[in-house]
Length: 294
Ligand SMILES: NC(=O)C1=CN([C@@H]2O[C@H](COP(=O)(O)OP(=O)(O)OC[C@H]3O[C@@H](n4cnc5c(N)ncnc54)[C@H](OP(=O)(O)O)[C@@H]3O)[C@@H](O)[C@H]2O)C=CC1
Ligand SMILES: N[C@@H](CC=O)C(=O)O
Image 1 (tube, rainbow, N blue to C red):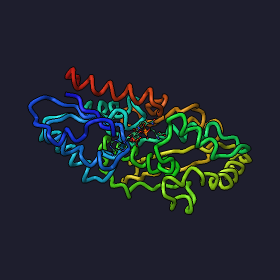
Image 2 (image 1 turned 135 degrees about the vertical axis):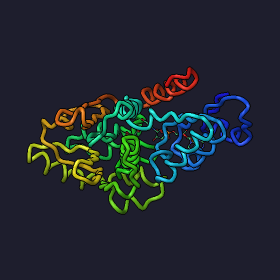
Image 3 (image 1 turned 60 degrees about the vertical axis):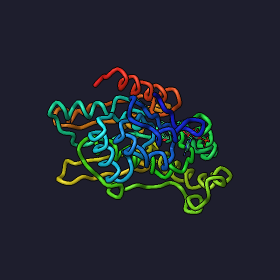
């Protein structure tokens, strides 16, 4: 049985799930109510394949519950789509650790929508117009404030860090939001009409970066090299030739520093948002589970 979540799907069928036949639940929503059920489904014998970061990227308690439920239910959790929209990031971290390596730091652009917006934004046209285009293209979260506030990348960095062995709580990631307070307070249906609140502050930041010969990029960093873990997400003004400033489109670009690759990190780059790559990642995880791939 394959149960797909979505309003037209059949999530409630999982309440009646008997465990007699193998099931794979695919969560392609951004719904907290659906993510809250992942551990229960796993414990009851249904595999879960998810694009939602609200499972493993939420509280540490939920992370532990999902890991424990996989053991209890002898089930698997397909999470390839959650970070990098299917780029081989999580599987690389797991392979490095399985081979005895230790991850020391990760740094990079983890938001496809913010990569696209800041790659295209020219300081002349309205910033809000680029956010709307990222929404229309399917790169942004259903509520674009999740991207602009850094919350979506906080979740991705938590998933990366936890997969790398650093069991961080959400409040251990320092996040800089670029959402003005008045915009942050609005109900979701009022957000689109108020996106222009971003325009003046972003134009000012763009201009001061540009005058310094720099580029604005949305960056995530986690570093455990100095005895404690420091994790941060936010807008950075980078030299124009900085490797994190030169990727284009929706590209995510992540440098992994580990014992094997420290001064010259392992770099993974590629499209990090969009329906095509995300659907391919979900399908790959479903097939991997169905075929018993490790
Ligand atoms: N867009 C991308 O590039 C990527 C997205 N993701 C993740 O994928 C998920 C979906 O993102 P995206 O496709 O962009 O968002 P969309 O808003 O386009 O799609 C979300 C879908 O989920 C449905 N849905 C929402 N809540 C529920 C619920 N409680 N029960 C059943 N169905 C529900 C929505 O239905 P309705 O329309 O009726 O509200 C809609 O069909 C998010 O978790 C996102 O973080 C991950 C990687 C990349
Ligand atoms: N909104 C996200 C989509 C993928 O997770 C992003 O911009 O990267």
